[in-house]
Length: 67
Image (cartoon, rainbow, N blue to C red):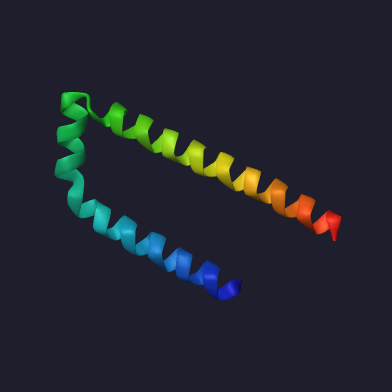
C-alpha cells in the first residue's frame, strides 16, 4: 500500500509539472468558454466511476457476509 501511495504521489507531481507547460491550451479553452464543458465531462466521469465503485463494494461486502 505504501508503494502504491508513493507511486501515485510521484505520478501526480509529474503530471502537474507537465501541465504547467500546457497553459496556452487552458487559456484558449477558458477564452472560448469550453473549459466548463471539460469540467462538466470530468465531473460526470468521476461521478459514474464513484457510483460504480460503491456498488461493487456493496456487492463484495454482501458476498463476504454470506460466507
